[in-house]
Image 1: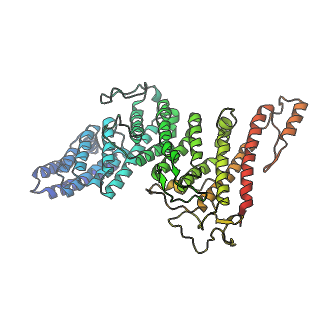
Image 2 (image 1 turned 45 degrees about the vertical axis):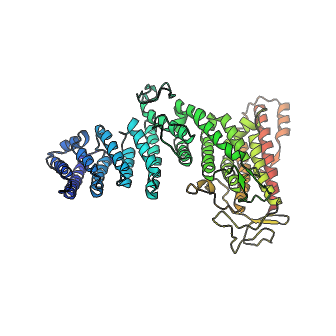
Length: 562
């Protein structure tokens, strides 16, 4: 809601008078000091003579807020409910003086420690952070700490609400920063210094004060997720890896402008986030099965068993980094993509391979991204052939699946392996109602997935799951198949979008004839036009890569039977 104006003041004053009267009635003889404070607040409001005076009293003094905070200190449930309700009205109307912030935060801490109206406390915190910009510095750090401590509550409703409060608080900090990026002189303001910062804390030499909180908060989330002590938040504070990764993914996905435009944030991506991602990749890469089999059963005994909650959130971060920060992290993305391909190795659990395939499906649907992979990796003499490895991994997954003995499975991804009545199992004849992958004596029902990237990954979105759900083999098979088709379309789009040569191309008639001979190549998209010599190398590499994709898909097309 907007700041106080004439139309809203009268309504707010009426509500506050009613609340003070109710607090006074609840206190009665049991809490005479609270009753007296509430009556003072009631009288102060009643004596306001004009709208201008009301606005001044509400926004510049503690005459109204102090009695409410004093009432909260009683820890009486009903009185606390009424007091926090009034405080929330004031916050919503932006009628909270910054001078009262310290007292408000201290009162919220008091109620949290006494376990009094925890949900109301969290609601008040959210309003304070999301509707105003007065919370900053150590006050913000205390609020984040309070939310994280309440996240550890044994009461599920409090823990879940605190989890949401942490996410919304972190988002609000970055939203406030985004809103100031276009301010005049934003990048010319020197860094703010706080005496509470540790001496050995690595700080940027120049940072706008409005970016300070976001910088310190993001840095601490990375450090806590990595198992290191925080620098800005209390050093004793802990955070679970799933929550930390989820917060990082949300920030990276929704606030990319900050990291692309503020050098200090971009540097933190390279120095803090990327090493964390590579470190967390290691346990999953080292995973191996005790008795690997070609049919990829999902419940074999394991050693160094990877965590589904960690792996899923980790791959969501990888997807965000590759899609939104690729040009800043070309070398790092080469490492991420190479590790991602290893997730599809046959000795990994099926859920882990499915996660990797879902991420690769997202990448293969983006022509410009695949073009960048080709130019920066596959076309470089001493670089990893990332794009070729992706295609080989997807094609190899499907081929190995179809050539290996398996057990009957049903369609899709659900909580059960039981085949529905209208599904067809492996080794039985397909019906005219179910699309089938069929090769030799193997027949597997296949999902009909959209051919574009509009379909959200199923496994990557299961943030509420502590363990991987049972996965029916037809789902990753269908996603891998669709990813290969997306790669063909994306490569085709990339080739078709290559610019034509200018009318005065630097080619003589002989060179032009050679080019036409070399480039008059029939592909799945027809005969491509010739280009100037400068484009020849790029063209031939892209066409070569498209042929790799085509060979992989052609095998699957022969196996696809409806």
